[in-house]
Image (cartoon, rainbow, N blue to C red; front, side):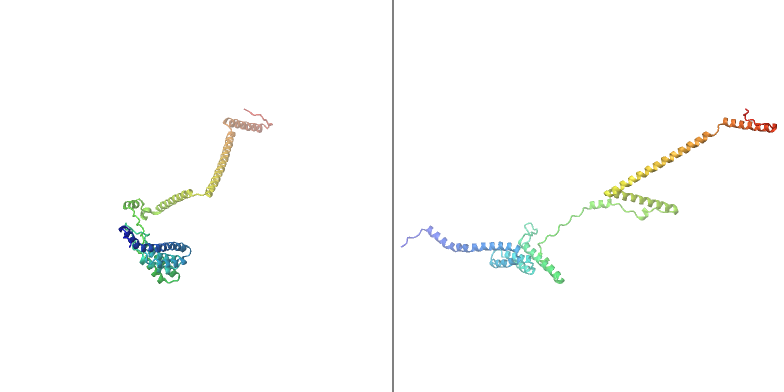
Length: 310
């Protein structure tokens, strides 16, 4: 007959008997769960290089994890792989399944839309899938289906969208100051003075010519500010030509002044060659003496006397 076991040892054996199924379940389920995690990572890497091949892998994972806590993940990954593989129809089917399995919630604790929440991830890719179908329908010129797919895309996106921020309106004081700073355009009656006859027409023409000159001057100033190197070279050449022209005019003017001075000197010489009163009196006396001598010779019939008698 076996001796009785102590109560403490009996309690340990009972706990071991009850925990043995849990240990066996852990030994079996642990590697299975680890295998699912590794398979999910492998298929994600495959989706970047071979999206079509990753679709089957994620479909198998979805079957293996259909009783797990995150059953939507494999379905979502399969739909995303189909979208990358340019299979929008398959993507819509898989992502619609994922939308039914994903935990609900599109806002954070502050009540704002959080695009990184699981539901928003599924809705965003589902909306892109509908838009891809709309593009394909547009290429086939099936515009009725384009409208249907675009409507489905908006419905799929749902609340997972952010509205653009409202632009601040300018304050009223600033808008009023800007309106006051703008000069009022003069009316025709104010800008055009009344004309009366020919004098009014001349004044208006002078005014128009003055305005045109001022506008030409302003445009010239604006053009001077925007001159390029070629314009500067041309301007320098024009300045040199103007300087040469002025030098020629100065030389011509100096030549005219010299000719005028010479002509003035010639007139002075002519004036200086004119006889003085004494010389004129002497010549008149000589003429009178010659005349008297001729008269005497005629009266006496004598010879010629060439002397002067004074």
